Image (cartoon, rainbow, N blue to C red):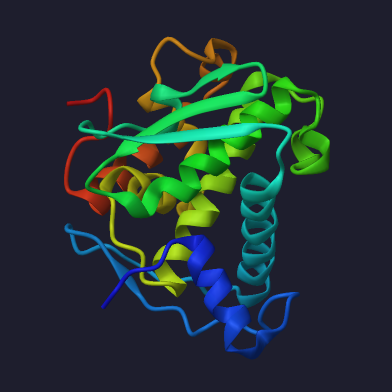
Length: 219
């Protein structure tokens, strides 16, 4: 089956007769399963419709707004969104694994949100992230990335990608803060200092059960 990017998937629904405002309902989600056997299926149709609308709006702005540029290029490495992000005036640069082209749109969303924050325009696109500290913003941006990936994987048959699947599973389990801090040692020290040891232990146990390996920083 030919796989769709989030942009072309959204366009396909509109062309199928759903109207310019998007589909009245999304396709039936498919159960997701990763190599360890852990399963995930979206169950909140209302929430996922909101995610669809948000992703559709953000990608339309990224594609059509001439006031900025999101430059995304492929890379030979597996990279998380934050690892290659570079922002200069009016432009954000980001890279993604060339063998996983389906991740391009979520990575562009991440770069776009960071650029809009730098330009003082984040309130137009992610109101809950306006005026917050760096850690709270990063959580909101990565939650948006995770939601976009869940939408693509469960509803539009995007190909698996281990790094974003890891983020998505953690987000859906309520462990996105713990995962991000484990993946990014040396950053967000104030948030790290406030971690609940009980939650950290629960996260580590969940990670081992879900992915069949030690969590980041515990190998």
